[in-house]
Image (tube, rainbow, N blue to C red):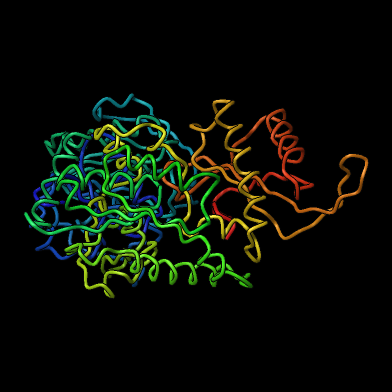
Amino acid sequence: MAEKERGILILDFGSQLTQLITRRYRELGFYSEVHPHSMPLEQIKKMNPYGIVLSGGPNSVYEASSPRRSIRELVEIAPLLGICYGMQLICHDLGGQVEKGAHREYGFNFINYKKALGKIPAQQKVWMSHGDVVTKLPPEFELLGETENHPAVIRGPRILGLQFHPEVAHTEHGSDVLLAFTEMCQAKPSWNAPHMVESLQKQIRETVGEKSHVLCALSGGVDSTVVATLLTRTLGRERVHCVFVNNGLLRKDEYETVLKNYEGLGLNVKGVDASRDFLSGLKGLTDPEAKRKTIGKLFIEIFERSLDPQWPLDFLAQGTLYPDVIESISSVGGSVTIKSHHNVGGLPEKMKLKLLEPVRLLFKDEVRKIGQELGLDKSLLWRHPFPGPGLSIRVIGEVTEEKLKILREADDIFISTLKEKDLYDKIWQAFCVLLPIHTVGVQGDGRTYDQVLALRAVTSSDGMTADWYPFNYDFLREVSNRITNRVRGISRVVYDVTSKPPATIEWE
C-alpha cells in the first residue's frame, strides 16, 4: 500500500470483479489495494492491513491448477473476507467441504438470514456467479444466511465468507455487507480528498527532495492537469517544468484554449506547435498501430528538442492511474509492471530521468476529487477522456488536413449540442469518427458523394466497461441535421450502439 497507508488488502484469485472490490472500499472511505493471490507472506505482514479480502475466481478448489494459499497463515495477520471462490477456498483449507453444485448459479438470488449481519435485512437480493457450493462448514464456523440450495453467508473466528458478490451494484445492501467486514476488522475510514492530497504531497517531497526539478508532459487531459497542479503546489513553480505539445491532432481550438487554462492555473508551461511535423509524419499511413508508433516517435523527438538545456531536470512525471497498474497484475502470480501506454513512453530511459508517478495508486474519480480539493474548475476536471494519438485514430484511414478539418467541425457541433442539452456531464466519453466510406446524398437539389460520420457516446465509471448512451430520437435528429447542414464533406451520420465489451470505446 501507499507508504504508511493502512487499509484493506485484496488478494486476486482471478475474478473479473476484483478491481470493483477495491473501488467500493475506497468509495466507503477505506484505502484498499489489489495484489496477486501469491503475494509473499512477509510483504503482507509488512503492509499490516486492517483486513484481507480473498476475491472470487473462475477455478474450482479441486482443480490441480487452482490458485491456493494457507488460510491459517493469512488469518493470523488480519481478519479475512472470502468472496465466492474465496469462501470456498477458506472452507476447503480449514476442513469444510466443497462440491460441484446441482446447477450453476448466475444472476439474481435471495438469501435468508438465520442470524443478523450488520444492517442487512432478513432477506437480501444478491448477485451470484458460481458452480461449486459449500456443503459442510469447517469446525467453529456458523451459518448466517442461505439460499434455497446452499450456505451463502458463513462466519468463523476472524473470518466472514460470502457465496455472492457484494461489490456489484446488482446486490442490494452490498455496501452494508462490506462495511460489516470493516467493523469486524475495527478499520477506521480516513480515505478522502484532503487526506489523499496531504499523503501525496508528503510522498512527492520525500521522493523528489528539496532541490530536484521535475519535467511534466501535458496532454490537456484530467490526469496530467491534476498531476502538474499537484506538483506545482507541492514543489513550487520554479521546480516543475511543463511542456504542452500541439501535435495537430487536437480538437477545435483546443491548443489555444488549454494553453490559456494552464497559464491561468499558474503552471510553468511551454507551448510547442508541432502540428506540421506530425501531419507530415502521418502521410500515407492507414494502419492504426503504424499511426500510434509514428506519433509516439515524433512526440519523443519534438518533446526532447523543446526542452531548455538550462533546466536541471531529475524526474519525469507521468499520470499513470491504478487501473493501468492493476491490468498488469497476473492473478496467478507475477509482478506489477507499468504499461508503456504513455505519450512519452521510452523517454525516461533516453533522457536518464527518474520516473515520478504521483497518482499511480488512484482511480480516475479519485484524481478528480484531488483536482476539486486543489480548486480546479469543473470544466477542466470533467472533460471527456481524449486518446494520446488524438484525432488520428478517429480518422479511419489516412490522416489529412482536410479530413481533420471535417472531423473537428463535426465533433465541435456534437459536443456543443451535448452541452446545450445538459447531456455532457451524463456521458463518460463522446466523440465523432470519420469513416473512409462515401455514400450518395442529396443536398440543395444536387447529388453528393461524401463521407460517413459515426457518433459515439458511452457511459462508464472508469472506462473498463461501457454502455452506449440512449439518446432520444429528437436529439439524434437535431445533431445529424446540424452536422450535415453545416459541415461540408459529410452526407450521412450514424450512431454506434455497441457496448464494451464486445467493442472498445475508441474505434482504433
